[in-house]
Length: 173
Image 1 (tube, rainbow, N blue to C red):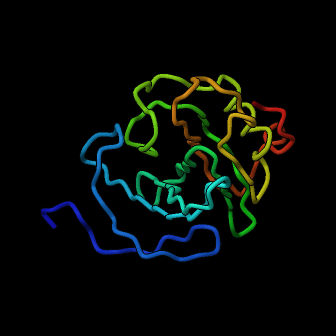
Image 2 (image 1 turned 90 degrees about the horizontal axis):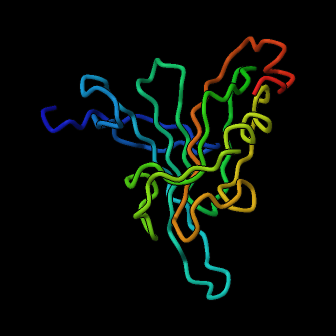
């Protein structure tokens, strides 16, 4: 276990179950905390050429018992956040743009300090209080905070049983 790779675990994403590795990585957190990474490779096609383009979706959380989870979509991808067992989504934070060159690498990523001002409000409005939330990481949805930069949507959320009235009504943003 000195290599930092722990035994494989099952990661449920959408309706697929994937085998993944648990890894100790520093995602801007103290090194003593474990980070669990779940990556799903998605095959899409570039419309004009029908050439396969591989991109990935990533979810990660600090520990399996923690409630907050992080979900990332690379530019021009769609994804779903789901809560099970009658739980509802509560968005903790959301950001569309680029703040980290390690998330969704590829394309032009030299600017890492841009973010859409409306991304958190938009995601909260569309997701809070629902069991399922469909998201897309596009300039059309969030605006273009940094032209010609490869962007991604990163959402931190938790699944909760009891949602206060303001969040359930989506007025608390």
